[in-house]
Image (cartoon, rainbow, N blue to C red; front, side, top):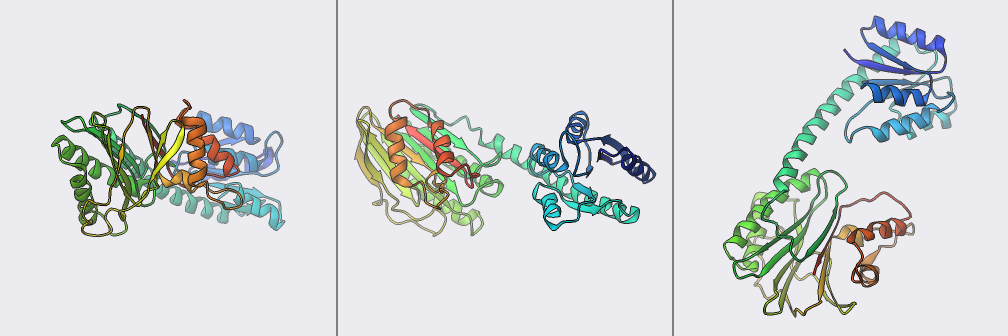
Length: 364
């Protein structure tokens, strides 16, 4: 039996709607304003809401905004506005604030019942899909909790748009002590991109444990993505092979933002992309397309996905490499937390909602 919440400051209207809904076989909960509606939803779950607009304390627009904001991601509680308002602007506000439908007051009982049934059916389908998605996300999150990950010498920031992310960070040491690191970004973000992560992770750690050189691992990852994943699923990634004992650094960059080395507080080197996206072609060219550098005590390497660099201002300007390097020199190298990039990007974008995952890794 479905539960319907009636939100209206007119007691006569509430009684009329309650009687009609009870006769239709629904459970009924009532509230006289938006604040009471939020309280009722805290007390129990409801399947649909009939919302008035003009009410004291909190009107229907604000109540709907808060209800939709508090709803779990992907889950739908339909809000049908019942209103005596007639202007196009006010009716448009019913939808802009998150409402799903509206009817004029007093509502025609036959029409109202039909709308309720349609929206309950839609919500049931949407919520079943949301539950299935949640189950899949939980499976992926557990698969990503890999005990092979070696955190030594690293600081990592990962801020996915949803519960899952297309960004991936893998870190391991071979038997000879050489540190192998991969920071990658699958095409797109969210569930589809996140599903690919465990396959790549398993191969990376398995081969590293077998003391396979990093170029061979990159080649096999490329083959895995090319042969096993959908044709529109690619991986941009940067790979580091760091021998701290010998002071040797190797970098491979496959269509990833430039890797930055900072020495003595100044951005010294950029290691740009020299390989294509992994998975876009059957074979990669010979391993000459790597950057080789000297690793000194105090050096730091920074890798970051394009979610930060492509953050746009209100004038549509990208945050870009120069601002990123200045930020690293000014804030991070002197001891700041990686998380301080988030308010910097938010201020740069004018507070606009992020459109991509943001990942940043510091190699100490």
